[in-house]
Image (cartoon, rainbow, N blue to C red; front, side, top):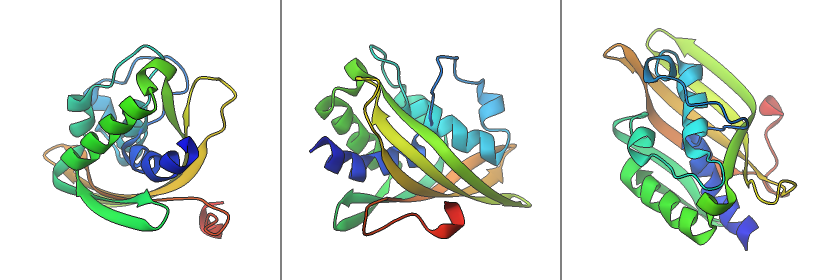
Length: 176
């Protein structure tokens, strides 16, 4: 059951989700928003938490441009288009359901492919999402596709599309 939900929720998290494997503090905002790779990595770090800690949803929202959209795998057979507020609500519901604040949660980047051109960028991220407790808990692989824009002196996430890896839906060869 946890696996099924992670297959659906973790992709969105990862999309937003930033991964924090170690315990270092989050980078300063000027560093996180300075370039496309930093903002993508920063989001995964922002949605990852150590056991006993809480998410900073205001900070998570700060990664997204106004009117940003996410296309996420909600169930094994459905995709949905949601806005940032809907994404945060969905994530908060999963935080409660899976006791992420008690168990810790991480989305780690397995592979990142970035194309930058002028003030726009596209980033594909293969990620793994998992509860941190127990420490040997396996994770769920997913693929996030970010569209990014530089505006007003910083980078913004404009959209994220997400899907999860299954036996019937393996990773494309371009990101293996």
